[in-house]
Length: 156
Image (cartoon, rainbow, N blue to C red; front, side, top):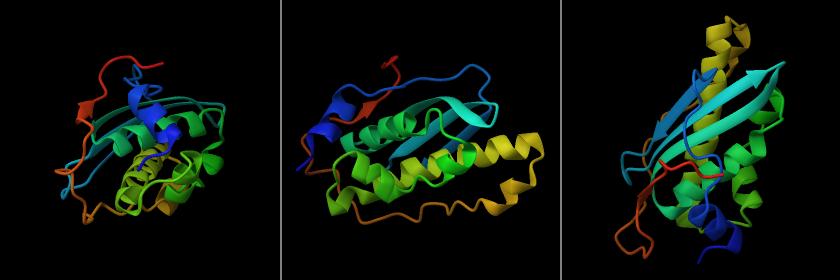
């Protein structure tokens, strides 16, 4: 059901945790399945220097959060804003259709963190970033085999 990359990022997530005094924070949740993602970024010289996450959710939610943090490091804010759910899913060698919303949540949490950073900087580009709140997706967790997990340990 899941690619090897999804399983790797679920079993050994990268960049789990918090950034002390983050420059931007974004949080997204899905009211239907209960997935919650928090993304924190550190920005230096217009590039994302560091990104960390905490996610409560299924394996796909954890894997997509982990992948976003890997994709975004070193990118300019504009490059990071171009990361979409399809970018995330492709980097993980695909996701089952019922799990694509997890990649939406991860990309949206990143975009919210960037918007938060720009607002704090008084940057008018923040007004151009619109992140739609999750309206829920048809999504079932009851049949899944992997346990739900909260990424609190420091995964590197």
